[in-house]
Length: 463
Image (cartoon, rainbow, N blue to C red):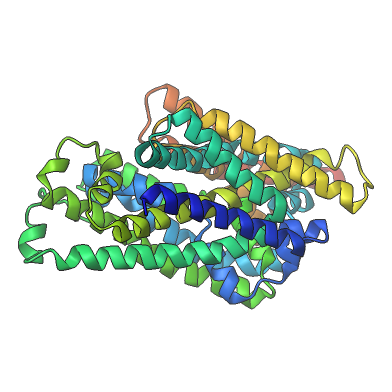
């Protein structure tokens, strides 16, 4: 049987699971948070699948070949750091609040105006992330099935949209369990198979350029700025995100949410390294791949394998990673769109109507993300751009709102304005290397100055 046949069957199974999970959705809470009933065995895989997508397998492996280990500090290393920080500092206080979206947290802490601004920024930040997953699926269909990229984008976005619309978080969680199993089995078996073909591993790694495996940059300003930016782009920038927040709130207990974060970090780092090894092994051992772009090398290399089972395992792992990440990312901004932008306009609606609004929001988000995917061809940088937006605008208000009692609405507003403006200004002036760091600094400064101004204002009013 052909590889195309297995791909079609796998996609159908995914849609069928979505159809089955739709029977578990009785209320809008079931759709958004799986009724807050997920046990550790489901919550940890779905947490891991939050960001283990195209950028980790296709994007990161290409960056690794281009720039060595320093090229992948952002992902998988930064992402693993993100999960650790969530487990240590974010999961417990957020879970105790018992709210539906992270934007609800911003409303409670800083008011309705901040809720509106943060909702808009967060939805925009997700468009690039979802577009990256759709684009990656389309690339697979282009390479494997020979479909035009535009047709692949339409099919991929339609499939993910259908099962997300039908089953919501239950569909995502059940599919994530299956897809995580396929990812782990596929990549571990393939890596073991490739490793056995390497006679002398030390001489094999000696073929790499000098400093290829360096974990720290040279002592130059630009290199260290890039290094720190890579760590914090996803490491900090993905903390104030609805998709991971939704998984935290879907856990059946506070303890499950914390341990799911820790387990996701370990899984992400260990499984995230495997595509890097595979890409390097194929690059150094197969001269026929010399002219293949690094961004597509891993996929092309696997397709050259003689054994169909090897191809099936890898393509299954790749599709699983993409769809699990895309579906959760699709539900997140759709939930914010319904809960924080649409429902305040039409309050006191029946729960069935609310479910319709949620499903309609999923469809709208999928359409805009698919259209945006047509404007870019680089999966890795689509993801980076989406994380930087939340890093320079939403990270500081989240942390300050949880841990700093003096944080104020004025500080939060100044933070969410100064961060993005500074970032964009620095980019346009040519300071690309320092732009994210300066944006984060400006966001922090805005919170400090704004909160201090509000305290002084309140003090003078009380006199």
